Length: 323
Image 1 (cartoon, one colour):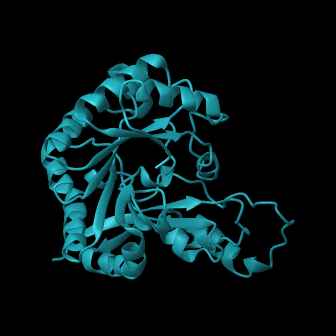
Image 2: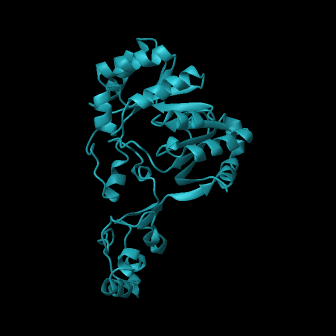
Image 3: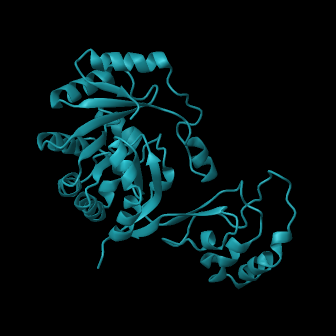
C-alpha cells in the first residue's frame, strides 16, 4: 500500500523557502506550540474544519451536516434541517458575519462534514490525505521553473519530522526525479525519525528558536535537547544546513541569546538566516478562535535587526536577513 501523508497546503512559486523557485508542501501536525507560529492550522495532526465567520451567510447547511447534531439530538437535527431549507434567502447586511449556528469544538476526529456542506467556504477543510505519486506529479508540473532558477521542492509544516515515513518516501521520489529537496524543520524528533528524513534532504532549513532550555520550553512547549542533538548530527554527517532564527522582539533577540547562537553556529560552521517577526498570522488565530500569545506585538525595528546581525557577524557567522 502506498504511503500517504496529511497535507494542509501546497504553495507554488515560493521564493522564501530554499534556493530558487520552489513548491512548498505543508504537512499537518507539529509537536511544538510556538507562541508566534504562522501556521496554526498546521499544529494539529488530524483533519479539521475551521470556521470563518466573515464568510458565513447563515444558511445552516453546516448544522444539518454535523454528525454531533444529526446523530445525537433529533430535535436539533430537525431545526438544523429547517435552517438549511431556503436559508440562502436569509438577508444579511454587507460585511456583517452571522453567528455560527453551532459552536466549534468537540468534533469527531478527522470530521470535515460541515466544510464539505458549506457553499461559501465559511467552514474550511484543513488537512487532506496525499499519496507520494500524486504529490510528486504536482511537484513535477513546475520542473521547468526549478531548472531555470535552481529551485525545487520544500517540505514544511507543521513539522515534516512528525510524518517521517511519508516525508522520507516523498523526498526519495523527488530525488529519483532529479529535484532539489529542502526540509524546513524544528529538528524536534527521535534520532531515528530525524535520520530517516534528513538522509533524503539536500538542504535542512533548521529552526533554532531559543537556546535557553527553560525559555525554549516556555515559548514552544518542547524540550531543546533533542533539537540540538539532531542539529549537531546533521552537521557532523555533512548535510547542508542553514540555521534559521525567527526574531521575536523581547523573546529571543537579546544579547545573551545572540551570543549563544553565534557560538553554536560558528562551532558547527553554519550560517544563520534571521527572520524578523511579523504579525500577519494574527488574523488566522482570530478567525479560528484560537488564543494568540503575541497579540499586538510589533515587528522589530531595522536597528534591532541590524544589532542582532552585528552580534553574529562579529563572531564570524555568515548572516542573511530573510530566507
